[in-house]
Length: 81
Length: 146
Image 1: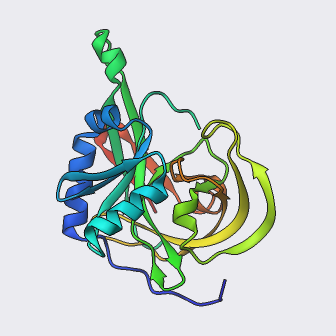
Image 2: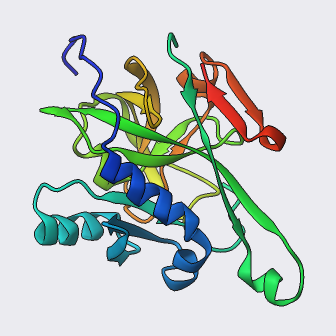
């Protein structure tokens, strides 16, 4: 790692935060439909889901290009890490 | 941390218990993190603030975009996550926490960089909760890192 002092990024965009809020409001239903999977959300719609997060990012990039989408892990059941 | 980062409680009812008439909330304390990458910062990722976890654990598809200082390149078993066969290497990464309005200064932290894409991103104690103050008061919907 180079010893550089990076500037912090800007806070996430309003669209990103709206998608995040939507996902958390619908968490139980999303987790039921996509249990223990990575899920990508864009414009309050699920655009990709898979147990493999790399696959979700790949498909989402293919669909959206560089538009910002929200991605999260939809836990189902009781997990004690 | 010079800035107070607001954390979020992710709450859902367990549907299996709910169908049996039992209201069991599954609550996680979460935040957003961006890792320092080779060409800037990664996208934001939701992370679980896991006080039962000694060291942060990052799935491969997230850390492979990051700038990494490898500290120990032998694979070690990460017990209690995934199917029990998850391994990872210890490295140092830089990341920021953010909420809806604020972004923290960059933090250098040791983390296990997992050889797996199917696990969540967990923030543990070492270099994070050992340094920053974690305040959590669920009753008032108030949680911060500062």
